[in-house]
Image 1: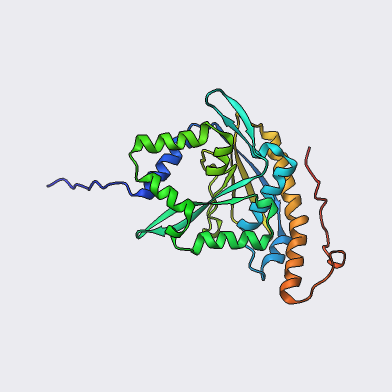
Image 2: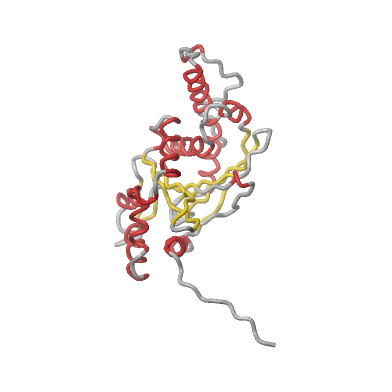
Length: 274
Protein backbone atom coordinates (compact mmCIF):
# COMPACT_ATOMS: atom_id res chain seq x y z
CA UNK A 1 0.00 0.00 0.00
CA UNK A 2 1.58 3.36 -1.00
CA UNK A 3 2.59 5.73 1.78
CA UNK A 4 0.61 8.95 2.01
CA UNK A 5 2.69 12.09 1.71
CA UNK A 6 1.87 15.63 2.74
CA UNK A 7 3.27 18.80 1.28
CA UNK A 8 5.79 21.45 2.23
CA UNK A 9 4.91 25.10 1.89
CA UNK A 10 6.62 28.42 2.40
CA UNK A 11 5.70 30.33 5.54
CA UNK A 12 3.54 33.36 4.78
CA UNK A 13 4.50 36.81 6.00
CA UNK A 14 2.00 36.65 8.93
CA UNK A 15 3.53 33.35 10.08
CA UNK A 16 7.00 34.91 9.84
CA UNK A 17 6.23 37.89 12.08
CA UNK A 18 4.47 35.70 14.64
CA UNK A 19 7.53 33.40 14.62
CA UNK A 20 9.80 36.41 15.18
CA UNK A 21 7.62 37.67 18.03
CA UNK A 22 7.62 34.26 19.73
CA UNK A 23 11.38 33.91 19.25
CA UNK A 24 11.83 36.85 21.62
CA UNK A 25 8.78 36.17 23.80
CA UNK A 26 10.13 32.78 24.88
CA UNK A 27 13.19 34.54 26.33
CA UNK A 28 11.00 36.41 28.84
CA UNK A 29 10.52 34.72 32.26
CA UNK A 30 6.83 35.60 32.27
CA UNK A 31 4.29 34.80 34.99
CA UNK A 32 0.49 35.33 34.85
CA UNK A 33 -1.50 36.84 37.72
CA UNK A 34 -5.29 36.62 37.62
CA UNK A 35 -8.10 38.47 39.38
CA UNK A 36 -11.82 37.72 39.08
CA UNK A 37 -13.61 41.05 38.69
CA UNK A 38 -17.28 41.90 39.17
CA UNK A 39 -18.16 44.31 36.36
CA UNK A 40 -21.94 43.95 36.29
CA UNK A 41 -22.61 47.71 36.53
CA UNK A 42 -20.11 48.38 33.77
CA UNK A 43 -21.65 45.63 31.67
CA UNK A 44 -25.11 47.18 32.01
CA UNK A 45 -23.87 50.73 31.29
CA UNK A 46 -22.00 49.89 28.07
CA UNK A 47 -24.64 47.75 26.37
CA UNK A 48 -26.35 50.43 24.30
CA UNK A 49 -23.60 52.96 23.60
CA UNK A 50 -21.09 51.13 21.40
CA UNK A 51 -18.09 51.10 23.75
CA UNK A 52 -16.32 47.76 23.54
CA UNK A 53 -14.69 45.83 26.37
CA UNK A 54 -11.18 46.16 24.85
CA UNK A 55 -11.57 49.94 24.94
CA UNK A 56 -12.51 49.87 28.62
CA UNK A 57 -9.67 47.55 29.59
CA UNK A 58 -7.10 49.55 27.60
CA UNK A 59 -7.97 52.75 29.40
CA UNK A 60 -8.18 50.99 32.79
CA UNK A 61 -4.66 49.59 32.32
CA UNK A 62 -3.34 52.99 31.25
CA UNK A 63 -4.89 54.71 34.26
CA UNK A 64 -3.58 51.98 36.58
CA UNK A 65 -0.12 52.76 35.18
CA UNK A 66 -0.39 56.26 36.65
CA UNK A 67 -0.75 54.76 40.14
CA UNK A 68 1.65 51.87 39.50
CA UNK A 69 4.54 53.20 37.37
CA UNK A 70 6.00 49.69 37.30
CA UNK A 71 3.44 48.97 34.54
CA UNK A 72 5.42 51.36 32.31
CA UNK A 73 8.81 49.77 32.94
CA UNK A 74 11.00 47.44 30.90
CA UNK A 75 14.38 45.73 31.14
CA UNK A 76 16.88 47.03 28.58
CA UNK A 77 19.76 44.58 28.25
CA UNK A 78 22.35 46.25 26.01
CA UNK A 79 25.03 47.54 26.28
CA UNK A 80 24.38 46.88 29.98
CA UNK A 81 21.36 45.61 31.86
CA UNK A 82 19.18 48.44 33.18
CA UNK A 83 15.55 49.37 33.77
CA UNK A 84 13.61 51.98 31.84
CA UNK A 85 10.34 53.73 32.79
CA UNK A 86 8.34 55.42 30.02
CA UNK A 87 6.38 58.59 30.96
CA UNK A 88 3.10 57.24 29.55
CA UNK A 89 1.65 53.86 28.62
CA UNK A 90 1.76 52.76 24.98
CA UNK A 91 -0.65 49.98 24.08
CA UNK A 92 0.08 47.34 21.45
CA UNK A 93 -3.23 45.66 20.60
CA UNK A 94 -3.44 42.36 18.71
CA UNK A 95 -5.89 42.82 15.81
CA UNK A 96 -6.96 39.98 13.51
CA UNK A 97 -7.27 41.10 9.88
CA UNK A 98 -7.39 39.40 6.48
CA UNK A 99 -4.14 39.78 4.55
CA UNK A 100 -3.82 38.23 1.08
CA UNK A 101 -6.65 35.82 1.85
CA UNK A 102 -5.22 34.68 5.22
CA UNK A 103 -6.21 35.54 8.77
CA UNK A 104 -3.30 37.53 10.20
CA UNK A 105 -2.55 39.09 13.57
CA UNK A 106 -1.39 42.69 13.31
CA UNK A 107 -0.56 45.03 16.18
CA UNK A 108 -2.26 48.40 16.47
CA UNK A 109 -0.55 50.97 18.67
CA UNK A 110 -2.24 53.56 20.87
CA UNK A 111 -0.15 56.18 22.63
CA UNK A 112 -1.22 57.29 26.10
CA UNK A 113 -4.54 55.37 26.37
CA UNK A 114 -5.08 56.90 29.81
CA UNK A 115 -5.31 60.35 28.20
CA UNK A 116 -7.99 59.41 25.65
CA UNK A 117 -11.73 59.53 26.09
CA UNK A 118 -13.50 56.20 25.69
CA UNK A 119 -14.99 57.46 22.43
CA UNK A 120 -11.53 58.36 21.08
CA UNK A 121 -10.08 54.97 22.05
CA UNK A 122 -13.01 53.21 20.40
CA UNK A 123 -12.41 55.15 17.16
CA UNK A 124 -8.74 54.15 17.22
CA UNK A 125 -9.59 50.47 17.59
CA UNK A 126 -12.20 50.62 14.85
CA UNK A 127 -9.66 52.26 12.55
CA UNK A 128 -7.22 49.38 13.05
CA UNK A 129 -10.03 46.87 12.50
CA UNK A 130 -11.55 48.39 9.36
CA UNK A 131 -9.10 50.61 7.44
CA UNK A 132 -7.31 48.95 4.49
CA UNK A 133 -4.36 47.00 5.87
CA UNK A 134 -1.72 48.67 3.74
CA UNK A 135 -3.04 52.16 4.55
CA UNK A 136 -1.94 51.75 8.18
CA UNK A 137 1.67 52.75 8.75
CA UNK A 138 2.46 50.37 11.61
CA UNK A 139 0.98 47.46 9.63
CA UNK A 140 3.05 48.38 6.56
CA UNK A 141 6.22 48.43 8.67
CA UNK A 142 5.51 44.94 9.98
CA UNK A 143 4.90 43.65 6.45
CA UNK A 144 8.07 45.33 5.15
CA UNK A 145 10.31 43.93 7.91
CA UNK A 146 8.87 40.43 7.51
CA UNK A 147 9.99 40.34 3.87
CA UNK A 148 13.64 40.54 4.95
CA UNK A 149 15.91 37.52 5.54
CA UNK A 150 15.48 35.95 8.97
CA UNK A 151 18.83 37.16 10.36
CA UNK A 152 18.08 40.78 9.47
CA UNK A 153 14.51 40.54 10.81
CA UNK A 154 15.64 39.11 14.12
CA UNK A 155 18.34 41.79 14.45
CA UNK A 156 15.74 44.52 13.85
CA UNK A 157 13.50 43.03 16.56
CA UNK A 158 16.46 42.66 18.95
CA UNK A 159 17.55 46.28 18.48
CA UNK A 160 14.00 47.53 19.09
CA UNK A 161 13.66 45.49 22.29
CA UNK A 162 17.11 45.79 23.86
CA UNK A 163 18.95 48.94 22.85
CA UNK A 164 16.84 51.99 23.81
CA UNK A 165 13.90 52.25 26.19
CA UNK A 166 12.48 55.21 24.26
CA UNK A 167 12.63 53.41 20.91
CA UNK A 168 11.28 50.20 22.44
CA UNK A 169 8.19 52.04 23.69
CA UNK A 170 7.77 53.94 20.42
CA UNK A 171 8.14 50.92 18.13
CA UNK A 172 6.62 48.11 20.19
CA UNK A 173 4.74 49.67 23.13
CA UNK A 174 4.95 49.35 26.91
CA UNK A 175 2.23 46.70 27.21
CA UNK A 176 0.26 44.42 24.95
CA UNK A 177 -3.36 43.28 24.88
CA UNK A 178 -4.52 40.06 23.26
CA UNK A 179 -8.07 38.77 23.77
CA UNK A 180 -10.55 36.55 21.96
CA UNK A 181 -13.21 36.20 24.64
CA UNK A 182 -15.83 37.21 22.07
CA UNK A 183 -15.18 33.78 20.51
CA UNK A 184 -16.01 32.08 23.80
CA UNK A 185 -12.41 31.23 24.73
CA UNK A 186 -9.43 32.67 26.55
CA UNK A 187 -5.70 32.07 26.85
CA UNK A 188 -4.32 31.29 30.30
CA UNK A 189 -0.69 32.26 29.63
CA UNK A 190 -0.25 34.15 26.33
CA UNK A 191 3.31 35.04 25.36
CA UNK A 192 4.73 38.45 24.52
CA UNK A 193 8.18 40.04 24.17
CA UNK A 194 6.87 43.04 26.13
CA UNK A 195 7.05 43.42 29.91
CA UNK A 196 3.26 43.17 30.32
CA UNK A 197 0.40 41.53 28.44
CA UNK A 198 -3.23 42.14 29.38
CA UNK A 199 -5.73 39.36 28.79
CA UNK A 200 -9.23 38.56 29.98
CA UNK A 201 -11.70 35.70 29.62
CA UNK A 202 -15.37 35.37 28.78
CA UNK A 203 -17.58 37.83 30.68
CA UNK A 204 -20.61 35.98 32.06
CA UNK A 205 -24.18 37.24 32.44
CA UNK A 206 -23.47 38.40 35.99
CA UNK A 207 -20.50 40.52 34.93
CA UNK A 208 -17.88 38.16 36.37
CA UNK A 209 -14.65 37.97 34.39
CA UNK A 210 -11.13 36.63 34.95
CA UNK A 211 -8.57 39.32 34.12
CA UNK A 212 -4.89 38.46 33.75
CA UNK A 213 -1.66 40.36 33.47
CA UNK A 214 1.30 38.32 32.25
CA UNK A 215 4.43 40.09 33.47
CA UNK A 216 8.21 39.95 33.13
CA UNK A 217 9.37 38.75 36.54
CA UNK A 218 12.78 40.36 36.04
CA UNK A 219 11.30 43.87 36.25
CA UNK A 220 8.49 43.47 38.82
CA UNK A 221 7.05 41.05 41.40
CA UNK A 222 3.63 39.44 41.54
CA UNK A 223 2.32 41.45 44.49
CA UNK A 224 2.64 44.66 42.44
CA UNK A 225 0.59 43.08 39.65
CA UNK A 226 -2.04 41.86 42.11
CA UNK A 227 -2.44 45.40 43.45
CA UNK A 228 -2.53 46.80 39.91
CA UNK A 229 -5.39 44.42 39.03
CA UNK A 230 -7.31 45.62 42.10
CA UNK A 231 -6.69 49.21 40.98
CA UNK A 232 -7.96 48.35 37.50
CA UNK A 233 -11.19 46.96 38.94
CA UNK A 234 -11.78 50.06 41.05
CA UNK A 235 -11.11 52.27 37.99
CA UNK A 236 -13.51 50.25 35.83
CA UNK A 237 -16.28 50.39 38.43
CA UNK A 238 -15.57 54.01 39.40
CA UNK A 239 -14.02 56.51 36.99
CA UNK A 240 -14.84 54.60 33.80
CA UNK A 241 -18.37 53.73 34.91
CA UNK A 242 -18.92 57.46 35.46
CA UNK A 243 -17.56 58.19 31.98
CA UNK A 244 -19.87 55.59 30.43
CA UNK A 245 -22.89 57.11 32.15
CA UNK A 246 -21.95 60.65 31.04
CA UNK A 247 -21.42 59.41 27.49
CA UNK A 248 -24.83 57.74 27.50
CA UNK A 249 -26.45 61.01 28.62
CA UNK A 250 -24.72 62.87 25.78
CA UNK A 251 -25.83 60.29 23.21
CA UNK A 252 -29.44 60.39 24.37
CA UNK A 253 -29.48 64.18 24.72
CA UNK A 254 -30.12 63.90 28.45
CA UNK A 255 -27.04 65.91 29.46
CA UNK A 256 -26.43 66.49 33.15
CA UNK A 257 -23.70 68.06 35.21
CA UNK A 258 -21.20 65.64 36.70
CA UNK A 259 -22.66 66.24 40.15
CA UNK A 260 -26.09 65.17 38.89
CA UNK A 261 -24.93 61.87 37.43
CA UNK A 262 -26.03 59.11 39.75
CA UNK A 263 -23.59 56.22 40.10
CA UNK A 264 -25.04 53.89 42.74
CA UNK A 265 -22.68 51.57 44.59
CA UNK A 266 -19.65 53.39 43.18
CA UNK A 267 -16.39 52.06 44.54
CA UNK A 268 -13.53 54.17 45.79
CA UNK A 269 -11.14 54.70 42.83
CA UNK A 270 -8.12 54.55 45.11
CA UNK A 271 -8.99 51.07 46.41
CA UNK A 272 -5.93 48.83 46.28
CA UNK A 273 -5.71 45.43 47.99
CA UNK A 274 -2.84 45.06 50.42
